[in-house]
Image (tube, rainbow, N blue to C red):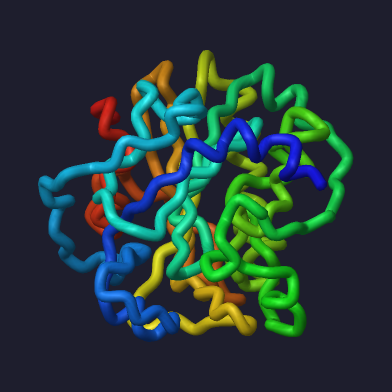
Length: 276
């Protein structure tokens, strides 16, 4: 299996953490009082507190090349978050939602030029995650949602990276129309931007949960309320983010600022830089 080829070098890289609320733990079927959660976003346009000062986790020791200035997003050190390093991306996986909290990539002109691999469509559950914390293939069957890539398959520069991108750890339950329509356009536009950039472009993609999220499957895989894609161009020090509701009627809209993304999610995604 493909994950057997790279699990050994990443087994050291898991740790626990994230911001969250006890309500989300309860509705996802986890009774642990210390379980960590995916962030619950403020509604677009509403006020939200800036990230509070707190002890942050030090993770991703084996794959910090996917983060601007080599520094992953600043999240609290708590249980049930695990680092997963792959050839072309890195995942902070949330065992409560059974989805990624975020997925980080580094792209540039050369990597985009190499992203011409044949799509495999061989989805798999990543064996590095405990069974109780991961999605399984059956969870998505008949759910009415697609298995939505956070690091897109079309971004992958090698055959092995392409195969790895089909890990369910890289997926969220995503609206089928949104995934194949406006979200696919955002992914394509991001690749095109990276192909024209003068250097590295760092991308962080993930779900946001609001209120009591719905779930799919026997393992209660949480359905996001929103999805975000942060783009940071290191050569220009500019950052912006795409923010979309996870619904069939979602449309591509004007990107939001980095400051607005931080306000909505409560996460400092770029602690090592001060983007414009």
